[in-house]
Image 1: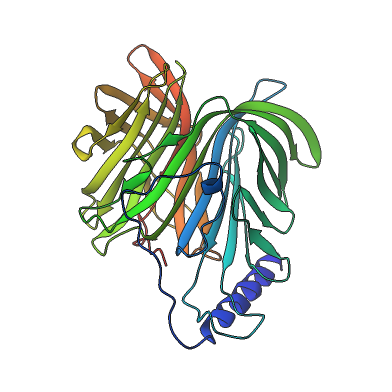
Image 2: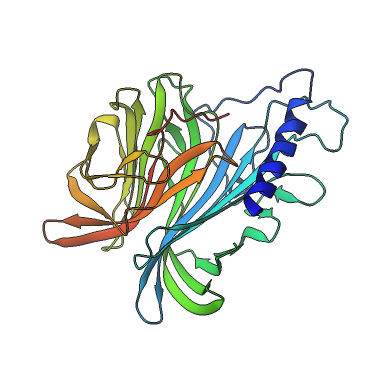
Length: 359
């Protein structure tokens, strides 16, 4: 019944989009040369088509059990005429995803929501991070972020404390996503967030601690027509450094573009060019839910840093077709080098079932 309610809710949102008529809005391009301004750019950028705040991390219970968590808020500006007088017109949508990965369970738990940014149902504030969808929230206050999620079978309330500066990806935050400069996003990360809070499973709350990663990205033209998806990695390294690496794939599974940022423990940042990043797929896992075959183990090279990736568990697939229309794999991974563990983080894989469409 809950699934049916969500389908009806999504249908009503899409209907509100579909009945809109008139001029399609214009979306600004992401162009190099503009400096990001903090903390203002931690807030929403309503003129752009697509934007997301993405938090992932590893948690530890009081008993020492490892868990992975993810919460993402999306803001999207549909092709709706801004002159439409209806108060119900979906000029802006807010979507939220959350997940909890437990190696003692057969699969990760997932939840998703979607609403129009009207009547107080949802909002993405300008000027600082403050994204809300019902009783789900991600909000910043000085050096702290706080996030709250209440799903049917899990919930968490976490505080995330900054321990280092913002990591600007690409050239001052201008991050290319393809051979053409027009395929780009504004993109920064905040690695190494110290996590404290409470997790509720099976109706029982328990304290947790951990380490997290926050990404914030916005764009109007993320993927070009030849690109079908991406492989993305955010790692908090055990030596205090951080690595973000990605590749954009074409329909043949080859790298169309790649890049990344590698920050050393002393704060120096290396911007990785396409030829300095390699993702080589290893063991695959076939989803019994969608039939998609996901590469869940990898060899990754970022300049001279080479390592393998191992998932916390194989079934970390997210089926978000009710909200974003996509199926993706997003999971907690451990980076292993010749001498042992190098770090922990999250891996995201998109476009393996069907080409990813960002509208």
